[in-house]
Each structure stands twice: as structure tokens, then as C-alpha cells.
Length: 259
Ligand code: NAP
Image (cartoon, rainbow, N blue to C red; front, top):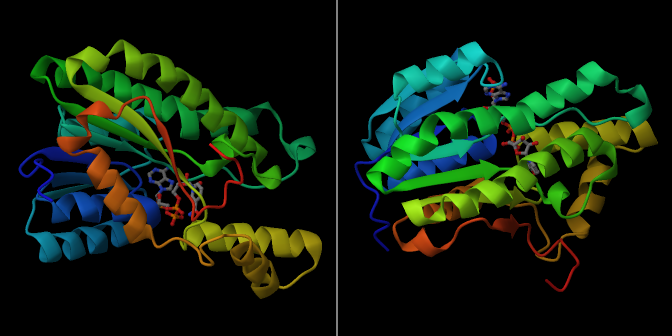
């Protein structure tokens, strides 16, 4: 399927590894030029080289912390009016809520709620003026079914979800869609770090924790980030113009509800 977005520009946050990288790669495979971002310059440059070699699109790198005003300013300066924005940032650390103080909560809100809102604020009106825009926020299945040790994520991402639910409908006539993609468990460094935390806390081996988590997924395996990237690219397509204000789970059937 031709997604109809070749030649457009996407800004993909937190994209040197994992799900962000997969979204960038799938957009590039459909001819979309990229601004990609991460804090670590080395992995970011390596990702940019891989994507350029695989797709031939233009890739601009911005090594910066997207959760800071300076980082976002640098990202926007590289391409002030993208056609597509993929919001992403590292997830907050796992833990027990008794150990978190106000500063921990503010950091989580900044990374997983306010950063996305600030970037949406910067790109939305120019998108609307051009009559086309696609905004995808990478959130988490934790928005639908909370994960006990990820309370900071459960809380902060739910805040973003509530905000987007209102905004996406308000701007729907303009040709800009805003959707949230909710990953279940994908084989990335982040997932491995979460298993290491649970293993330390419960005294079990990381392999045991990993196997148990995998066995709870109806499809019988963790997700491949490429599967996530392809769905993201589709949401950014011209064909997806009628999909907005949605929370799309991609979790191998793990969420146990009927709807
Ligand atoms: P990952 O493999 O650890 O990759 C994270 C990427 O984000 C890296 O490129 C990292 O590069 C970049 N990054 C982190 N913090 C950043 C910051 N402040 N500014 C700019 N770039 C930053 O993680 P992932 O699994 O792809 O997860 C992506 C998001 O999805 C996270 O919020 C995670 O909590 C959420 N999620 C993941 C899963 C899963 O199963 N993997 C499930 C639910 C939700 P640098 O470190 O160099 O900055």
C-alpha cells in the first residue's frame, strides 16, 4: 500500500533505539524525511546512518534531552513545521510509590505528559493551516491496564491521554489527527531493564521473570519493534485520515478485556 506520505517531514522523538527508532525506520521506508532525536549522539548517528542507507531519505539528527525546553527548541529549530510528529521519551523508572517524592512525579509528568503537550503546541497550528498533520504519541498499555511497579507511568501517561482526547476532537476538522499508540511488551532495552528490576525485587532470575511475562501474552512472544513502527507509519498515512482521538493497543492480545 502506498501510504501517500513520501516527501513529507516527520520529527521522531527518542528515536535512536527501540520503538522510536522503529517508527522512524518505517516512516523512512515510506519515503518520509526525518528529524530524529535522542540524548546519546553515538547511537543516534548510527541509527541515522542505518536509516539513510536503507531508505535514501534525508535524516537530520538532534542529540538532546527532549524533556527539556532547550532540547525541544533544538528539535524544532531543525525543522520548525513538520508534517508528522511522533512523541516519545524514556519511560519513568519502576518502583514503589512510597519511595517517590514530588520531584519524581514532576520528572515523570515532564517526560511523559508535558513534553508531548509542548511539542504538540508548537506544531499543531501550522499543520492545521496546511490541512494535513499526523501526531502519534507513544504511551503504554499501562493507560488501559495499570502495571503495579510502573505507577509513575500509569499516572503521567493517563494525564496525556485525557488531554489528547479533548484536543484531537477539537482539531479534527483541520486535517490533523492525533492518536496514541499503546505498546504492550516489546523486545527493547526498556523491557529488559524492567525485568531486571522485578527480578531484583522478587529474588527470581531475570530469565524466569522474562519467561513468565512472555507466557502471559496470548500470541506467545514479545512484540517486534518493527511491528510497532509499521502501525505507526499507517496511522501517519493519508488513508488513516478518519482515525483520530484513538488509543490503539498493540500487545499480542495481552489486555484481557472484551473491548
Ligand atoms: P528503549 O529501547 O530504552 O529506547 C528509548 C529511546 O529513547 C532511546 O533512543 C533513548 O536514547 C531515547 N530517550 C530516552 N530518554 C530520552 C530523552 N529524555 N530525550 C531524548 N531521547 C530519549 O525504550 P522503548 O522500549 O523503545 O520505550 C519507548 C517508550 O515506550 C518509553 O516511554 C517506554 O516506557 C514506553 N513503553 C515501552 C514498552 C516496551 O515493551 N518496550 C511498553 C510500554 C511502554 P538516549 O538514552 O540516548 O536518550
